[in-house]
Image 1 (tube, rainbow, N blue to C red):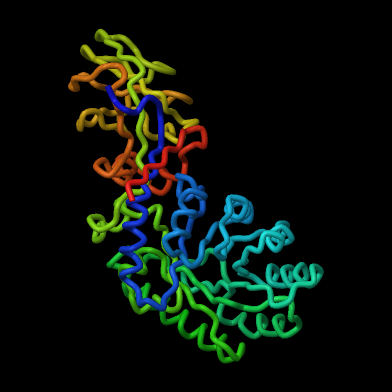
Image 2 (image 1 turned 120 degrees about the vertical axis):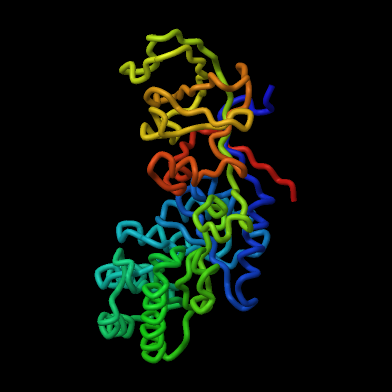
Length: 370
């Protein structure tokens, strides 16, 4: 009988510490580590992840939206928090909770200056985001003069950092493109530094940038420490460890005769005798319908059991004809041995999507072997 009694997401703090120390060993001691904990710490628990990383020495945190930063502040995080994609409607709250915005357009810059001025701020810290090839959000190099013009009109804000984002740093075949991005950012940063009259923090590297492009470490690097070790950069899979493992149990076992159907819309019809196991996790928990009909699998007693039929809201059914198992046995959706990347790839997606889709109703269990 498994020690797991229900569907749980296990968060391993020892693995988190390992990943942090490993990535820190890849940069110079004077380079700051910014831990990205957006999307509930990549599907786990942002507050748990951030509290532990704050304790072991993270210099900065980053989230996507203001609401995520507020959650961290309300959980007791004191470390600086960068909001990567702040919305102007939330600027007042951002300042109230002492979060730092990434400003990425003239509209956003002007609106933030106006908000900070109205709230009597002086030299409120901001990061200026430049687009160097990802073409998602960010100022262009030819916006620099306009940025400086707006900065010169106010003492309400101060640029503490310049940033950009690498598009393909995990892909060795895109090295020329990545180096073009790095050189573009250097050029932009030099122009901005010349006009500002001081040197803010520069940060462009994501996790794979840390590992693959030491020339882009600059003053700070951004790391999805809670995310890595899921097979996203095969060069470093052995060095980085998955922080979260999703497990469940077998609720019931059924034996289907040939011709019997299973699940909604009779999506599976047995062509031969089939033993199935029902597991309490479904698309309301983050296991989407794309994992149904033998595109997804779980692991039971170290053997793959493919999802059959359609994924239900609260349950999946898997084929265990070839597995000696019983009700109450442990089911691994992903963990250190059964990679989330492989599970996701088999269903035509990526581990990030699988991880960040895990529903809040899945119980989080913290494992601390430090």
